Each structure stands twice: as structure tokens, then as C-alpha cells.
Length: 199
Image (cartoon, rainbow, N blue to C red; front, side, top):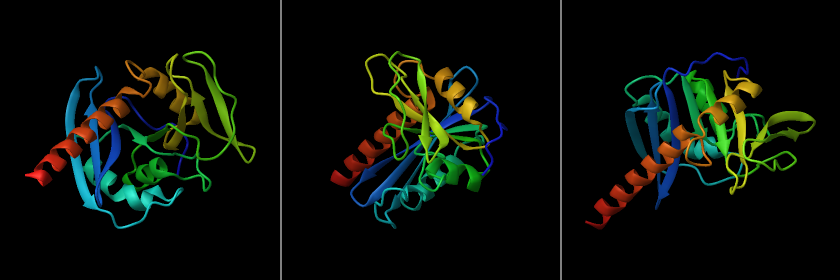
């Protein structure tokens, strides 16, 4: 895992997961420089690992990796719905995906898995997230009426750049745009899959 900046914003993507029965659905969305959608890809796999906090990669990682690999262009920066180094073992889902695909990644979560931070008060404010005396991310107040999100480097992105990129892509939602679109897309795939099951 490398936390030195080695990314570009040429092709920014997001990947998110949803669940339907015993299946894990992963959806990835790729954006161009002007945030136009270039590609979408999904993967549906049967669960092969139980839900254990701190071990999400073993449950969600295989589907997420397959979805990202199915995009028409390799991302130059990937937002992952999951922890980066803000993890008890300093390597969450975003870090694993980044290392295995050798793609720069940033982890975005809605809840703190480990560490302590002051709550930022105003939209755009961020506070360091500290775990065992080490900064592992930021709490970012992305919108005025929302709880802060957690932003952390995963792989090939520095601490400061992970926050800068998250802020850059906050548009109409508390989540960075690649995350928002991936979340929207994976839920569309889930809806269609559920509809086909009913038929």
C-alpha cells in the first residue's frame, strides 16, 4: 500500500455494493473530466463470506473488483464505498481493491469504524480522524443538513489529496459524485434483479 500521490482525474470512478438475498451486487460508474458518464458495469455473486465488521473485503471485494474490471476504461482514481486506512489493521476495502488492481483509491464511509475526531460544524469543514495516535482520515461535513462522512486514503492517494478530491466532487449530495452515481446505479441493478426473480 502506497500513500503517495500517483493519480489523475482523467477517469474517475465510484463503486458501491448492495445485497439481495444471498447475493452481493456491485456497481461501478466511470466519469470523464467533465463528469459525463462513460461506462457502467456490474457484477452479481453469491455470498461466500459472512458479514464480520472489519473484514468486508472478503465479503464484498470480489464483486467490487469484477465490476471495476468490467468498466470500458481503467479508472485513474476510484472512490470506494468502504474504509481505506481508517481501519483497525490500516487496510480496509478501498485499500485492498486499490492494491489488488493497482488503482488509486479513496475510501468513503458514513460511519466511523475506528478512531476519534471532533465533529465539523459547517459545510465544507473537516476534522482529522485519529486512531492510536495516527491520522487515518477526515470527518468531512459535506452538506449543512447532513452528518459528516468519513474520507480516507486507500492506495496511491495521500491524506490531503483524499480530502481535496472528496471536496472537489461534492455536488448535489453528501457523497462525492462518483459515489452517488455508483450507489444509484447499484440500486437500479438490484431492482431489476429482484424484478426478474419475481417473474
